[in-house]
Image (cartoon, rainbow, N blue to C red; front, side, top):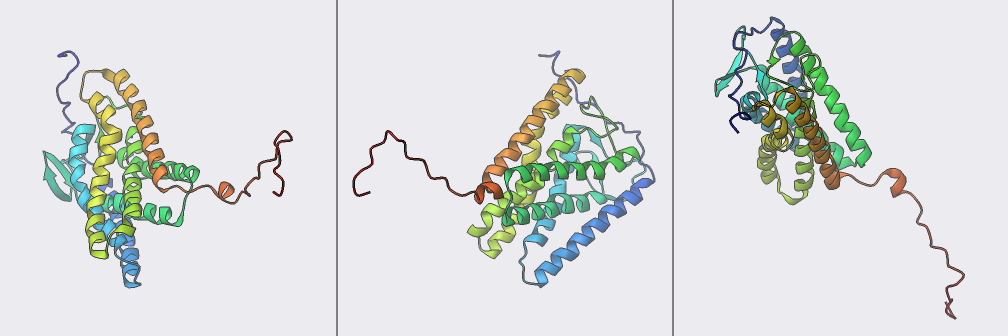
Length: 278
């Protein structure tokens, strides 16, 4: 057991953030501002408070960032960091992160809710899961390639500095949130819904990381080497696909082809007796 268990891997404390962090931060704030504008317009047009509540809940969900950074071995450097939001368990969280969480987890959670409400079949749900994975890659790749932040330790699925096992988990945060909102909305009054939505977003964030990310997190923090972390990453992939499938059981509707197919009338077998007068 002592050979398996290892000490906590220390982050690269001498890693210094590049000047690109300013550009990266401003880009996230712009996306956040656009979503806030749409949320306020929806509120003004009487479409309800769900969108703005999702953004608020997303900003609160940033509390998970230092926790998953320690467990999943991501380092947001304090050296060269110009704008800091808060410090927790020794991790300095830059100002951009509440904005990122607000639009990525909260804003996309609202978008998933709207998509589920309008109707989606299982095939398109999995396509959407893949699409948000690509969005996540497009969002994070510039950050790691320009040294805004870095991952460390024996990260599996690490091709260019971005361990893709994180990309399996991150889209599930807004998907779980959107599904929960979709199922709860008909059951709650407006005040109840506001409180529920704000709470759902950070809970969905934690649930996705715990349910899907635990194999890699466990492997990264033990002495199993790259072989162990890679095996764990495929377990995480299986868990991610399983969670997406479970979400589809809650929200997916029959495909258009199945829903519109004419009902077939079973043929009468020649050997079956036909009752008189039928």
